[in-house]
Length: 191
Image 1 (spheres, rainbow, N blue to C red):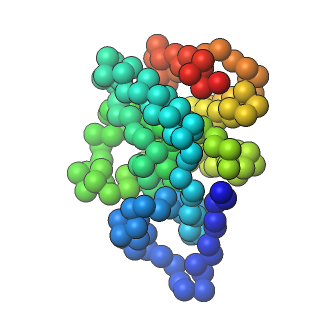
Image 2: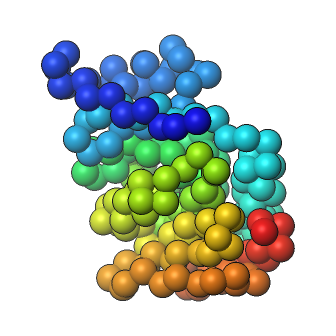
């Protein structure tokens, strides 16, 4: 399965409210919108990737319940980025102080905030190039720490604010560094 990108320019610019309503009226379809306003239709994950996504998300939820430092979100959460893109990382986390600055209406719709942390777990159908571009976009919009996990190659790319991408081959674990204090992800469940 492939991701489809649709240029809606001939029809005019879709407003944020129209995009929100499109997503609500079609909950079985995973939509994203890039900074150019193009609509992206994302295929659902397969069983293996879906299971690993759930396991990874659970690790973040358990850690966050203990630390109470922020809010954890799954891949169904769409965020409105400063550049206009609306994206849904596989796992994301926002510091509680930043989340609490949003209004209830902003929290209910597509929150206009870049998470502090994002994780993308590549599916067999994902393009490395497109996913790397998405990670660079996250970083350019203020995400402080991002992990791109490529199961097929057993490789992790780490994206940090103001630094070059770091590539790890067959790592055993990942550290949340100062963004996710004391968080460690054991990659045995991923590989």
